[in-house]
Image (cartoon, rainbow, N blue to C red; front, side):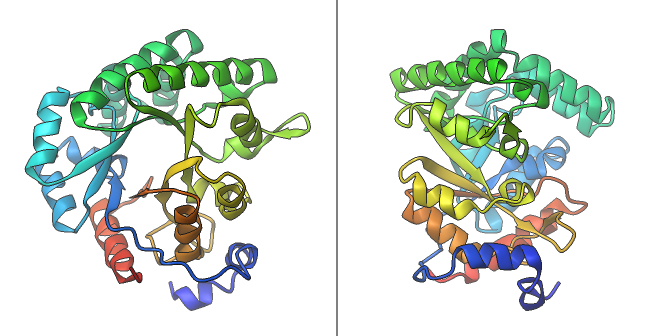
Length: 304
């Protein structure tokens, strides 16, 4: 899709308009990263071969999903082999990743996989998941242990949300004591309201900014009808990184650089707010290798 035409669309004008008046930013980080969930199904078929391709495309950093159900010592060796640093993981016990693997092999349904995730991230299990993430992060050389998702039942009412906010603060202390940092990754549902308040705002206000950092997902914020830039401007130092995505004319996932978002401005605003890690992610693609290749072609053209 022609980028100039797409930027004239409603969502494109919203994002560009909210950023109007800002000075131009140098958007290009020195090290572009990839959230390996993007190629997770392919990695189950040829783990090392996919990592080789990721590195060959020019990615320098990767964000893991736990240790992909594998020995983290072995995983660290593979990342080192291909020159891939990993600053962050999305928490996933081996049990959680086993469910993902079964889903990619079509052994269970999407709904069954979702239910498995909800059970795994129940409040009574949450801190054990964080402990597991800390142990893996130390082996993998990661700095950030990131909570990947809040499922609908976790946002059903203020009481359950407050319970998770308390868990996040506890997790932040656990990570700090281990020399790491706890973080939270958003989807779209955090931009719904509980009573008069937006859930995402409650998360920002209800967690200690020194203990709980944030990872902004460009796609899901935009999908929810929100603009990421005010969050960066109003919360300097809160965001450690971002998921770099794009949005097509129908509001669905797009290869980075082919959709509606003014990515140079978004990335520039994130950097001004202190974000240091930028991970390409394409949640659902019929050709994930092509998607990450073409995304990097675009990103490497951005001014540095």
